[in-house]
Image 1 (cartoon, rainbow, N blue to C red):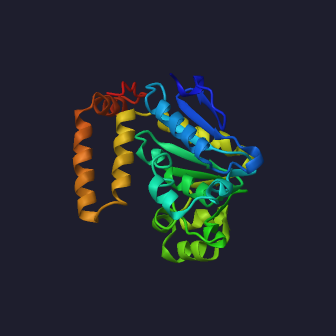
Image 2: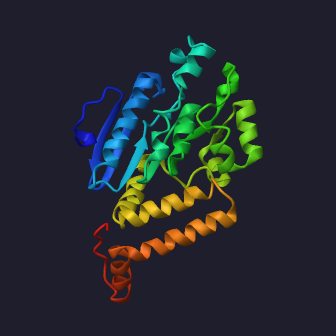
Length: 263
């Protein structure tokens, strides 16, 4: 069943052509990420993954908050034994990282704690000029647990990541852009329009080539330079087996638009 045809309680799901859109929708809680919402996000992502008509996905929130963090009320009563037994914030949260299709986070307002980590799991972040990013977990007696000490450090470097994780202070959109946390900053009123432009462009390309490029970039964070370049080279070679590679090069030499077949 298409993601947009399923009923959800904590998110809104729709499609715009070849783009799947997931909007976090717990406005009274500033989109705090509880287990029910995270499960629904994962289910919607997997439905879009299985839909051949969808080539790119957008994860977004509201004007006030992308997500203001994990739901503290849900966490407060848990013990060490509880979170260890559940492997808390692992399986459902990590669905984003297992998607082969690109996922873009469109962030306005607060992206704090788990909200910042959720955005970091996406392939890129496009931020409104109102966006604020932070890892305030230290202020409530815990540390980031969904990649905040790891993905954030790989994105912005040790010094800024250490500052954010040790103080809990927020950074604004321009600081995030300068640090490499986000791909671009746009006026808040234009956030979805600008993000959709990027998503439509990606969705309009050869899907197997886009998936291969995404995988190759992600390998850069997991291995050495020499191993990463070797992986890239083999992945590059593999694209020569695609009909789309022939079509893309033919279209270029013939000065026409490619007719991608996604094979």
